[in-house]
Image 1 (cartoon, rainbow, N blue to C red):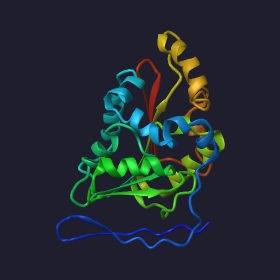
Image 2 (cartoon, one colour):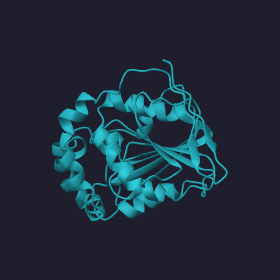
Image 3 (cartoon, helix red, strand yellow):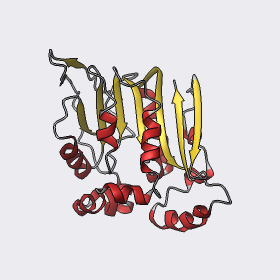
Image 4 (tube, rainbow, N blue to C red):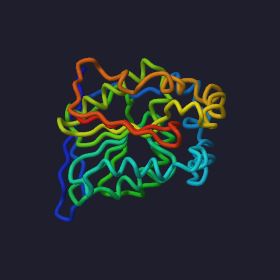
Length: 249
């Protein structure tokens, strides 16, 4: 499949100026699973008004939002001089704080398939000169191979049926450079003594029907067999309920 080739230049004041030349491609369609399963959280316009609250995002993660967010930043060689890609928008201040990790030459692209989420993020970043937002499907990214130094997926995989998850992981690994990092933060099967294991199980089964996949399998299980990482790291948080997996190409 033909991919668009994206280039960036930096003007004399350090502001990134897009110089993208994209091949013609059919409009990005909203995935059926997203409309059917997550309309209430990401698709309906009222979702933003309900969930775009820092305290609520932190509450949903049982007070671990800042800790998990900052664990991503520790994987970066900040200030970042290269290119970063965030796959899917995130409620809360994640993208704004990620943009603060950029150096004068660094850039951040964010790709999301939901127009409502794209519009919300554009309001939050408020014209940041080195952050660009793209309407794209995570399983078919319109970016060149080996285009990014870092690719970040923050609580995305658990929201996807397995077939979509496999494509998304493959695309994230395709667009990262040799030596670059793909950083996943998501749910994980907690320790059997963690009381949140028994609280979260019915909640996830009810509201997040694909999330239990991450309790049963490692994220690396959805990695293409052809990929041989230079380095693989994993850390769990909050009694194992959350995980960070870092794949270095």
